[in-house]
Length: 73
Image 1 (cartoon, rainbow, N blue to C red):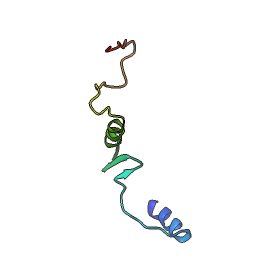
Image 2: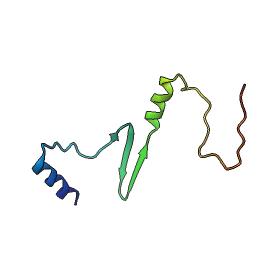
Image 3: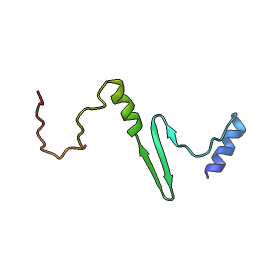
């Protein structure tokens, strides 16, 4: 099915097949048999570094319902 789709596109447009995707728009793609995992850890780290927040406190998300947040200051 994928090969057929590629063939149709290749008949209409210049196409280069680079193989399986490993990264796309800052998202790491890991393909295993019967499983695809998407991970944005590297992208998030770059954003944090850009705002000088790489050493900020970490928190798991989503938070449990009813969690009350407190100011650190």
